[in-house]
Amino acid sequence: MGGLIIIAIIGSILTWLLNENRDMSITDCGDCNVILISIDTLRADYNNLVKVDHSLTPNLDRLTKKGIVFTQAVSASSWTLPSTMSIMTGAYPSRHKVTNKYMVSSAEEDDLEVMNLKKLSPDLVTMAEVFRSNGYQTGGFTGGAGVGHEFGFNQGFEEYFDSVNFGGFRDTIPRSLGWIDAHKQEKFFVFLHGYDVHGQYEPEGGLDYRYVPKGYSGVYTGNKDEQKDLREEGFEKGQLFLKPEDVEFWKGIYAEKVERADIELGKFIEEYKNLGMTDKTIFVITADHGEEFMEHGRLDHGPTLYNETIKVPLIVIIPGVKPVKVSNLVSNMDIFQTLIKAANLRKDCCPGQFAKEANLLSTGPWRLKNRNSQIFFETEYRYYVDLKGVQVGSLKLINDFLNSKNELYDLQKNPQETDNLYFEYIRKNPDKINKLENFLSKGTI
Image 1 (cartoon, rainbow, N blue to C red):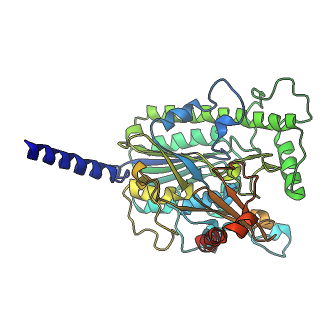
Image 2: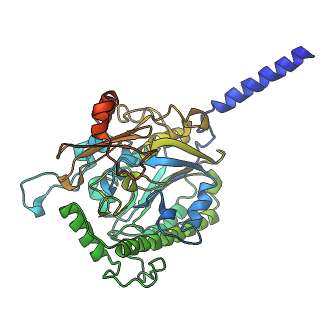
């Protein structure tokens, strides 16, 4: 009797070990369609920007209950062009080299050469190219501007829509659904993108100011020209001086855009359900970067690497994989490698392209301590900044290479990134600083 009990216990332990070490990507999804959705400028804490009595994103919330939710996801950069190219190539901006819109040149502005992936990094392949070479139909439906075809984002797509500058989901979703319907008998990969939350996007019919504080009597109306002027002023002067009520006004504008974007996302999901393919589709929902609201003295995004600009939502939904929340520090740049695994694509597609093996789906609850221990991010926004950063655990280092400035934050004690510990660590913990700087020097090459 005792022997039987021991055997039963051993069997239970073996079963537990097998399940606990199971790669979450082991699922029969080789025939799945793949839809990658990027909600441009959606920061990770979108629900906490204003006090409302309901969620701003009920449709996105429903999706989080069906998928793997990465609660500590960051982007590779803090603005659209380099960040989205990192998503599409799985490579850091300093690797794919599409770090700005134009090449540095002494030529007149009209003659500036546009940065293009194929010209700068001909050895790299895009996610769309890999899917296409694996027999998928490929369609991209975007809001143009920072993801325009001229930079190489159309590389690998049979159809690529980008003709509306700063277009939103109202522009891209109908086109994507029409294309999907035409290809529903084939396997397909879709990139769906919208600028609905971006400062340069204005909703059809205008804003209704639903979340602007009542009684606001400031000078702003929330239009894109005002937002652009504030962005440029903050960029040129290094800091804005806005009244608290003006900051709350802009947060209210952002919250309205977030809610409107979520409504459009809900319409897409519902229409896609009607096509009857949800149970054989992998969904990935993320953002390319976040947005500043004076946490560090400015509005908009691009020239900094603080968490308000690089922490993003990341949800992966795969048929047959149970919902789970993962608190590991991860990068949405690793979506590429993850989809290669999840969709059972050829693993020899991209020799030397990825800095490290980083399959998000092998980040199960049992591996939280060891996966993706260093996360890197960088920005060379308009050539006026050159910032590179690394986070290891709760410590985050940002190096400003143009101004020889260093910042170090303990995000567990100071998530607002206002208490620079760099010089304290130089005195008391120089080994930790050296280790972080060593990671930084190697991680983005």
